Length: 380
Image 1 (cartoon, one colour):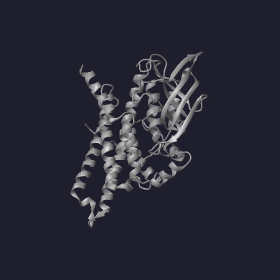
Image 2: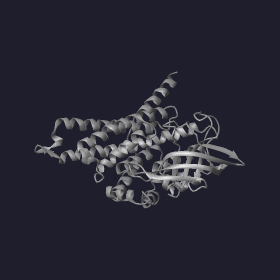
Image 3: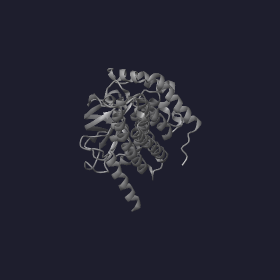
Image 4: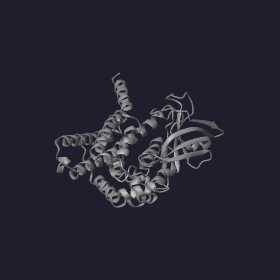
């Protein structure tokens, strides 16, 4: 399998890495998190106007760069290295994914706004009772006089505090856990009846509890087929899983590199602790976990457009990423000692992000079970 990058993809990586190195230093990130918005709109504007990366995975006829999952992987990995909190995943990967794959009549116009940095999306899918199930939905959407009326509660909607649009999954038919009867809607965040409780997450992002009370939207808000949107949701979420794995690779690399550098500086018994063989073995194990994660992410990225292999590849990569986030993160903190968790040291912030990624879109156990189910289904 060929993992080499094209010249254009290498240039994209260099461009993103160079910009973040100049404009997204650790202290700048801390200052942004402490500010009222909790993010940097100027950076988002630069992503759109200076770098053009908000159009990286979109076709050229939509105003994009003509890329795809590989380009999203490259961008997300570099964002992981810098701990970027701006909503690239929710807007470009998830929001853009729903628009690209659904055949929505306004897809071209909305994607144009994404590329221009004008539209920001947040994925409102999780509910308190659902855990990782995409089909366990209590939120309802009832047809009424040529429109839909939405009611329900969505939990931990990452990026919602600064979103312009919410992508809401709702039940238009069937029982709470039925695979059939699920639909997807684009809801303006400022629509009447939408209320949010905003808060920071442990890794520095911002999220919201979103309550929908008799929120009325037109029929044009429907994304994909009515009652049969679960396959579309699964496809976009698999793409989001693979992109999150790419972000994790950037986070893990910084954890591993930062730990190696620290052990070269920290001395005990008159020599750097990196000279101790048992710690060398530990850091080699960290490096192996990192390289396995990169390989699994590359494989999943290549297979994410293959309908027959997409789901299994995404779950397999997420299992490896989940294990690596725990192993590399916890060992990085252990080798730094208690100071590794202080707010002043970057390593603690990378550990927090790795911990959140470990359970994002499903834990290791969840994806092991899903992989087993998919394998059994194919074998049968």
